[in-house]
Length: 379
Image: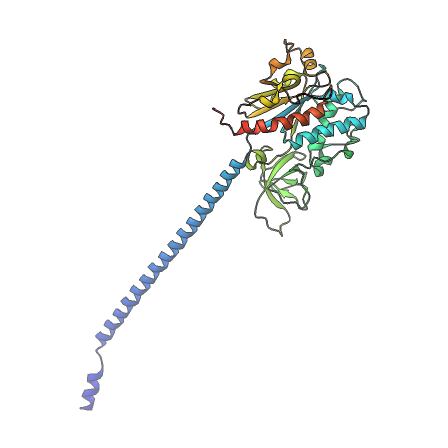
């Protein structure tokens, strides 16, 4: 009887196998559900990362568009004769006069300075030696060289300006202190630099001296000695031996970020060459001549423009440049310009020196130009 009861308490072997199959199926289903849930979580994380990445790209694009909105698309050019240096009595005073021109143009954010020859001496290069005050053809060259020297950031001058007689008094001039003249530890999105003659691995770009404690490795392989505008990458690893940057156009800080980034200097052999050798494809769409015989600047309304040019005469006015220009058959300089303006009506002195006229005229024209820039171009 006891043996029978004992045998009755045991489960059949087939039932145990069946239970194991049920447990296996349940475990398999649970495992499948967990795997499915894990895949769903992984997919959600992936979608979240993608969404964050898209948001970051949209934000970067928005910031870039905002920078473009901040950018300045128009330019201001100034043209003046190099002969104004001949009115100075010594090399030191000639240099100081050039420094006044550079300071005035920087204060009013002039993008291009054109030095034209009103004596028909056909000078187009700043190469050569200074041969003394009053020597033929040297005033334009010296003025252009000093203007270029002052525009160059201090840490780059040794690379681009060897010792020269024209620059012997340049160290006494007031610095321009423009936005691209950076201090060593000053933070900035852009910097001017010179490409170094330092070996780099193929495809890794060149090294540039940007006036910082660390050199900058740019994204392109360029020839040594070339001046470049560099946009520094952010964020930067503070422990890295070099900083990273991208080469951009010299106009990029102005057109994208709205920064004033110095001026360029151009030599013109005559007054007509100021217009004919314009570096902009569409030319100057607004030209202004300055003279005491022009109409008053107070009543002028300037049209919208992209590239404006303001031209100043020397000791004898713009008439001197017109008379010696072989390409001009006119005698009245006012016909060369869209506007011929007197920027200082009722002047108390018989004459206004060119360096004074520069400050007076740019100051008087500034509000009119600002209104013109805000006006739609098709209006």
